[in-house]
Length: 220
Image (cartoon, rainbow, N blue to C red; front, side):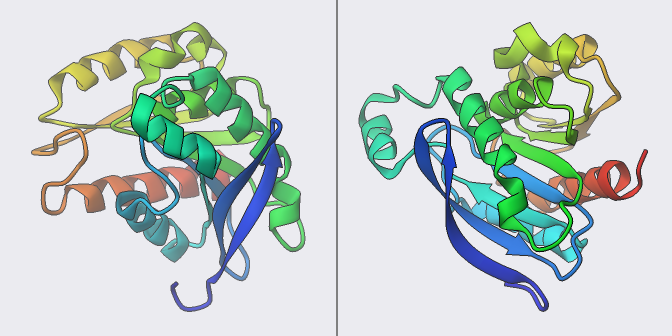
């Protein structure tokens, strides 16, 4: 937890489930970013926690949200039956976003989504049905799994892909052409799908922070 950041564990009722989350709030947040984790991941993902820390350092509040209940997560580890149920994940993200005013003190700041892998598809689907989500960032995402709604996403979308992740890069290039609103594609040289190479995740995190500050705090 950084200086001046209030962090707490919460439960959020969303789409018929009680979802666990880690909420981190600067004193005066410039925006509130919900994290939609990828396949088999959770609020304890070290990669997403690293990205969240960079966002918090930029003055953004973050919600590291589990889109599966603990019981579903155990089942999914064995069967993988939930991780590709993108519609379910999107409904839960949408429901959790509706509960956002209860997570902050004072006025609700502008909203954004950060999605990784399959979580990026859930974020895009949820953004397509909401008018209050201004920006979405996808890291190593699968926007192709949200292909049916991309033309209805009017939030500003940044797609971040590793330069050594050619198939996902191709999928992101195709998805970008379908997006309705402002978008950009950042290719991080030397990065593979999980951005495990030294320095690559830091590049992605700073790019995400800059995008959110521009489109949440900047009003553009």
